[in-house]
Amino acid sequence: MWWAEDVKCYDIITAMKKFNGFDILNFRPLDDRIFKRLDYRDEQERRTISVYARHHPSKLKESYLPWDLLLTERDVHNTFESLEEDKQWIIILGFEMLMNSEKFIDRALIEEVFKNDPWVYENWYDQDDFEDNLKLLNFYRWYIVEYGFEQLLKDFYPTVYERFIGQYGLEFWEMFQYTGLLGGLDFSYIDKSFK
Image 1 (cartoon, one colour):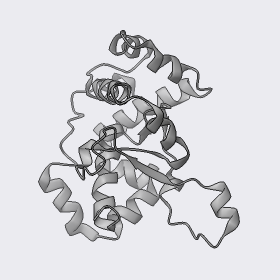
Image 2 (image 1 turned 30 degrees about the horizontal axis):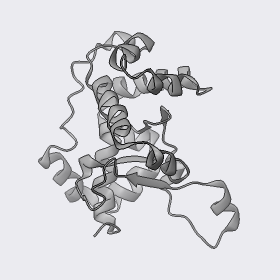
Image 3 (image 1 turned 90 degrees about the horizontal axis):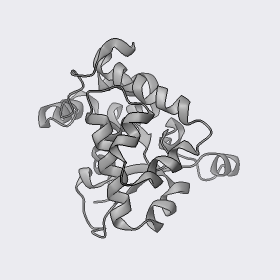
């Protein structure tokens, strides 16, 4: 069941929506190329393109619940695995608080959310492209409000859209919408002044 394409689809769309396409350990957008079906016969492709990993932030590795998962690159997955479980949840829940905030996300908000756990944002701030990624995260939030999550996938994650939405067609997409998965996060409250 874990490797079934429809299960992967559900997991990936859930995590993409929940975390706006970000690798939350390193505070950077996931590269759309990691979702590509690799031709493992192509040595150059194997060396240059990572692949995605669905991560269980819990000792309950058998959980198939998509909200128990997050996405990362396979190369980063072991870093998540090495963190104590409570630290994994601190990152996850704090990032969710940022995503659900009515405020523009900036360093002050990040430091407020993680005031008891500065190691989280210190790791994020150490990334060379932190400021660019922060702008991108806010842009994605605005983009979802303006154009919708489906359009975000089409425009910025075309591989995700084609592989995990396009192959199943409109009926599968409508099932997501019907279950509330794609409409489950309400972005309408975000201040549009940061357009």
